[in-house]
Image (cartoon, rainbow, N blue to C red):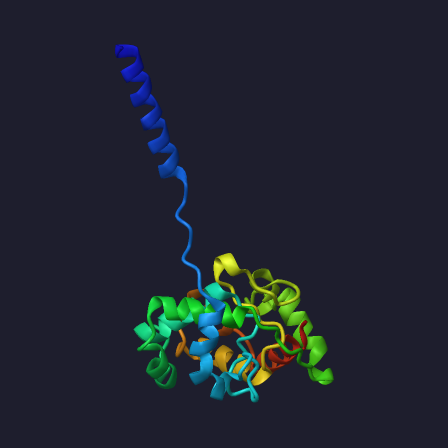
Length: 204
């Protein structure tokens, strides 16, 4: 009898250890719910996440993890933007996940790089500028600009050059805080920012 009790306790302990080793699943968003919630976003970002002008970023095809993370940053004011704070401040965590799921499932529209900027833009994007201490964009965002969802490195491919250039300047000035990007942008020349932004717009 004693052996049976010990065996049962051993089995329960083994189950408990195994259960503890199973990681919790990350919460998921509902794309259908996100579509309904996205109506207020459509004026700036387009009904399908492809914005009409470079003043507003394309969201279509962006990693859900990155979108949800940025919405949380807007809500906490870690990322300072008065307009986006107004929208994000009323969102629940589930709302953010739903919106992220909706936009990540949409197809991004391809952009075009300016031919006269493409060569220099590609050089900076793929290889950086070692003489100035500028790391290659491709090291984090990938050769095709697809980013890394698990690391929350955003997809850049097809993003408006105007928007990318604005963000690079914000990183350079410190208006937008991200240690890695601040370190890259602070050493970039204005002409190289313009070139790499244009090259990114043409990535597919």
